[in-house]
Length: 218
Image 1 (cartoon, rainbow, N blue to C red):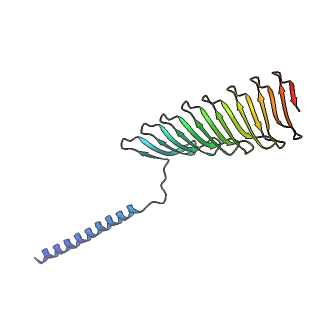
Image 2 (cartoon, rainbow, N blue to C red):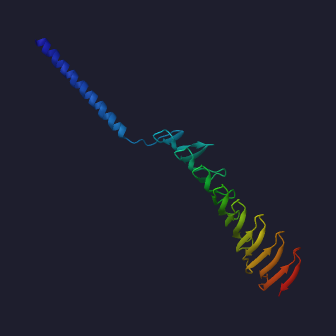
């Protein structure tokens, strides 16, 4: 009996020690799982829905970071990436995955933004010129320039209205001397000038189709 009781006591001690060890293991493991890692690294991250369709993808393309969100049909909706000029870029897309808005960097430097119509034609554009001055361009439904606004080479504002063949029909400018308006025919020939001369006197000059002056006031 004495030997049996001794074995029972030893067994109880072993059971208690094992139980303590197991509890310590689970508690320690639980605490470790609650710790937030400082860095998570991977070559690609994806967020998927219950059907496994990718809704968000974060990866690298051509050595540059890329973020793209998708519709449930797999069409791109928003894309953040690096442009060919090395600047950041944002593109948004319609339900068919076609571009409708773009923000990026111009090749000369500075910002650039464009809007597209339902036929994927650019109808609005604004940004910085090579002289770091702002410009604005409005296009027709085929993406052909209609209105161009920027600066004159000699300083001041400049705007031109163009026909569907990209020819200037009317120009407005504000050099140091004063405001000027030019009207051109379909052959790109100026047929009317109204504005300030270099000596700051007013002038109205009419030209024939060949560009020869026919009337001038004063």
